[in-house]
Amino acid sequence: MDRTIVLGFDIGGTKIGVGLVSADGKILGSRRIENVDTYPKDILPQLADAAKALVAENKLEITDLAGFGISAPGPADVANGVLTAPPNNPHWRNVPILQYLKDQLGIQGCFENDANCGALAEGFFGAGRGINDFIYLTLSTGIGAGIVTGGTLVRGTGLYGGEFGHAVIELHNGRRCGCGMSGCYEAYCSGRNVAKHVQELVKNLPDHPAMKLAGGQAEKIDMRIVEQAFRAGDPLIAEVWDEMSLRNAQAMGILINTFNPKRLILGTLAWAIGDIYMDPIRKYLPRFCWQEMLKDCELVPSELRREIGSYAGAAAALYFLLHRAF
Image (cartoon, rainbow, N blue to C red; front, side):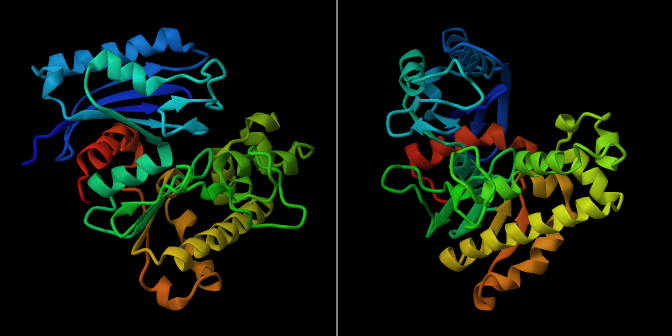
């Protein structure tokens, strides 16, 4: 078994994960650090301390590690490893996290977009193992794509490749997206935006099942409540669900026609909700892509599920520092 060992850091809006992972997929140890309304000057030393503690607990020296990887949300300066303006962390602006951890740990490191890291994690340890052409879609609060073709991660000239959540799928009166554009895929299908759309539809309908599930407070309607109302057979939510499924198929069809992947790996909403999320997308997909490419492509949920964050940074280290193949 390959005993190459790397550290991974998964920078989230509410928590930061630190993991010690072997190249054969074993999590040797992990830590979670709260990251709500924090300041980098307080958190960065904790990251370094947590990493050193994990190494010591495994009776290793820091020099035994091959390196570390950082999985980070955008927008970011990927080339220089700087967190420029993570949307859920208002006090984190232009934070040179990569250089800080290199200095504190004394080993090589790398920095990558979180959706790309998710794809690399699935490639090494999950549903993309042994596959050279696949796409991972985050499908959570937001939507991002990690695209692997010919065994290589698609990054683009400015290292912004994969921002597929901001592909415009509606030109006329498209819903406003958090990125500032209108009609984005994310504006129609991310968990946050589907819930916001339902909030607007039912806020003046106090007897609607979704409002009752939210205790009469429309702003508390989230994707879990939307799912519950759909499973209960509410006709209004059924229309919302159908539109979401159609838009998902429209966007996924573009990816299938463009990249001809062997597998399309779907993130949180797909594995958390299950077949009632996946099946309608499969029903609509033939409208949006060629049959020749659709028959080549398997639509599957993430295999790593909740654990993907534990592997994301480590997978980046394996890919960028060691040039490992899937």
